[in-house]
Structure formats: structure tokens, C-alpha cells
Image (tube, rainbow, N blue to C red; front, side, top):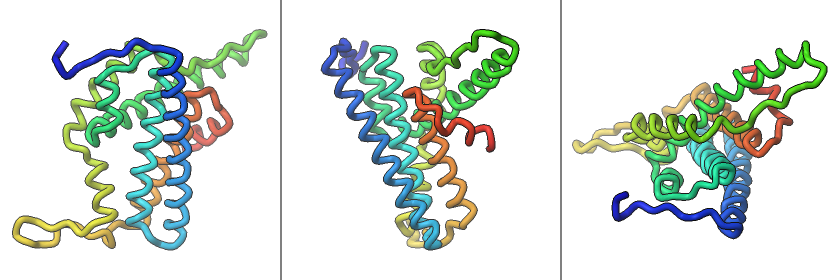
Amino acid sequence: MKNNEWIDTMTPLLKKNMAQASEEAYKNGCSLIDDAMILFKANRYARTTALSVLAEEEFSKAFILTICQEQDRWDSTIFKSLTRHSEKQGIAEAMRSYFEWFLNNFKNIMESNRNSAIPAQSAIYPGEAFMEKNLGMARSRFKKPIKDYMKQEGFYVGVTRKAEIKSLPSSISESHAKLTLEEANTFKIITEISVGNYDNVATLFES
């Protein structure tokens, strides 16, 4: 282990702190989506996109904190993934993998229950090995935080070294803003699933 790496032992207080942080990140993500929807209806597509990406990052944070509580894990690798832009986008990629895993698992369980007298429950957590593999792959893919650039483009005018305009918030289209808003809402539902809330699962099968 390198000098700047660490692993903390899970304690009741640490688990409580993680639960509170996860809940607050989730609530903040919901608030950001609400603001993004208001802006979308006002045709403010650049700000809609930027806030949607911020919401996605908050849901990613809530999601990984929840998973780590289940796995009794808290270490420097996880902490970096919650605080660095490129790492946070890596977590988002891991959530997409989890999303695919959950839908496939959920469909299989529902199909099995049709012919079973005792219905089985769909698993929520894919296991530590699955998450570790996807987190590692995600971190390697997102050395450059693509969505962070997208977020910045929603707020700022981009300028090159020759002072030429590189990007404009006004260039973000309605369809692009709608897509990022829909993605953020999907992340919201995935986060809810991670804590056992299946109320909005049906909407995932509609996409």
C-alpha cells in the first residue's frame, strides 16, 4: 500500500455518517433535477444540461456510499472517486453497468416467479467483485472527465489559446438537454433501487 493510501475499519459511527451523507447527496440530486426541469421548460438548455450533470454526480455519490455501507468498505480509493471529477465520472460509468445488471436480474426473477408458488426477491447488490471490476474499468476509461467538460460548457464560453471561441452555452440543443435530464433521472431511480425503493422501477423498462 502506498503512503497516501488508507483503509478505515467500519464502525457504527462511520456507517451512520455514510448513511447521512448518502441521503443528503440524494436529496441534493433531486433538488438539482427539479431546478433543471424548471430551466428546461424555460428553454434554458445550457443550464439544464449543466445542472443535470451535477445531479448525476450527486446520485453517483449517494449510490457508491450506499454500496460501501453494504460492503463495509471505506478507503482512499473510494474517497477519491467521490471527490475527483474524473473519478466521479468513473462512478457514473459503474452505475450504468449496475443498471444493466439490475434490469437483467430483475427480468429473470420476474420471469421465474410466474411459474413459482413462492416468489423470489430480486437482488439489489451485485457483489464486491462485480463492483470492483466495474470501478476499475470506469476509472481507466475516464482519465478525461468528458461530462465535466459538458457541465462547464453549460456555464461558460470556451476560448482557445488563440482567443477563438471554442464553445458556447447557447449552442447546446433542446434534444441534448432533454437527454442529459433523462439520464440524471435514471440515475435517481438507480440510487433509489440501491436502498430498496422499487417505486419507480417500472419507468426503467419503458426506456
